[in-house]
Structures are given as structure tokens and as C-alpha cells.
Length: 250
Ligand code: PEP
Image (cartoon, rainbow, N blue to C red; front, top):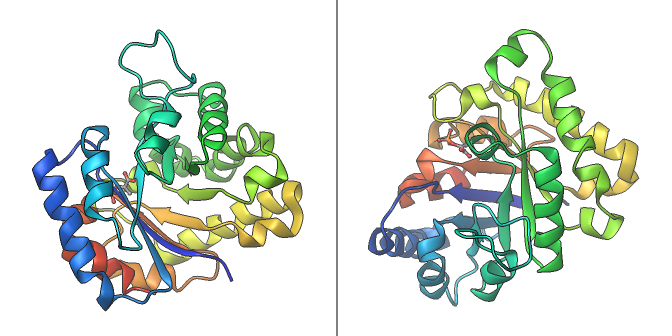
């Protein structure tokens, strides 16, 4: 049985006090959702600590949205994976399309970040996905395959056993356009097949989340698909009620 996961990527939203309120809201309503759903929230760095504190005693995990390629040292403005882990975080989102697009993150960068994450016992939520042009040219399978081969294939079997993948078509992120449930299933099954070619049966244990305008009204249909194990949620994670309601989609 694969883990069912609903992860919230708050991006660069919420001031610390707002983030704490949001986390309190999620914790308050969590009991209404099946305990089989693993909730994760990923606030900005500035209030990771406060959100970890707020969620203490709950089963809601906290993750960061990024980490540095290096362990420590003269890297002004960067945040090391060890610092994130020291706050009590369990996860880190890596390779989000906004990081790839706006901050030039490449597979080479991401290989280093993955190493840092594992060295500090953080579970990476590794994001893959094609842009609109690539989808329209029918290249989405190749793009996603390359993003997996160039990074995930460098992991050991032990590291792979502690990985979450998020498939996020760039054309669906924050646009209100969602992949259909069938489109999501098609590419999730493909991702699993690519993973199986390298990691064998362990691929059947790897949670693959869908991300891209996932909301309470479409989550159930998408989550019902065989290879969709939950969602990475942007906009709808900023309202506790919507975020929790997505969890009810299982
Ligand atoms: C995301 O950026 O990870 C995301 C899925 O955003 P949204 O849900 O807003 O499309």
C-alpha cells in the first residue's frame, strides 16, 4: 500500500503570523479527514520554526520549499538542509518548476540538493513536469523521463525508498487549468514504468503526487486513479478548509 499524501506548497505567501494561523486551521480540522492521509505543509523558510512548533503533537509534517546545494559555508542567502532538518522539518520540495524556470535550477543543481537532503534525513518531494510547448509538441513523456533519469536514477535503492515524486504540468500550475484525471493517470503510470526500469518493484512503493490547480472540486476524480497517490497543492493550500477538503478526496 503506497502512502497517500496531500502536501501544501505555500510558496512565497503568508507572513509568520498568518502562517501560524493557517497551520492552526489545518490542525484543527485534521480530525475530519481519514488518518490514512499524510498531510505535509511547506511554509516559507522564515516561519518554518513557528509552524513546526504550532503543529507539534499533530501528525501533520512540515517541509521546506528548497535547500542549498552545499552543506555550509560562504553561500550568502542560502539555507542548508541541515538547518531545515534542525528545525524539525521532515521534507523538502526540490525541482519545483518555478525554481527550474526562474532560478535556473538544472539536473546538476538538483543532484547536489538531493544529496544534501538525504544526508540530513529530509525526504525530497522531487517535482517533474513539462511546459505547454512541450505538451503541445507531444514531448511530455520525454521531458519527464529525462528529469527522472538525470536525477532520480542517481539515487541508491535506499534513498529511492524514501522519495516522493510530484508530477506537475507547468501549464496547469496556478493557471486554473487542470490536467484531466486520465491525463494524470497516463503520465503517472509512465513515470512509474520509468522508475521500475531502474528500481524494479520498489517503484510500486513510490508515492507520485499530482500538482497543478488541484482543488476540492477535482481532487477526488484525480486521486481515484490507480497511479495517483495524492497532490502537491499550491493556491488551494492557503485556505485550511480547502486544503483539508482536498484530503477528503481519497
Ligand atoms: C504548485 O506550484 O506546486 C502548484 C501545484 O500550484 P497550484 O496548485 O496553485 O497550481
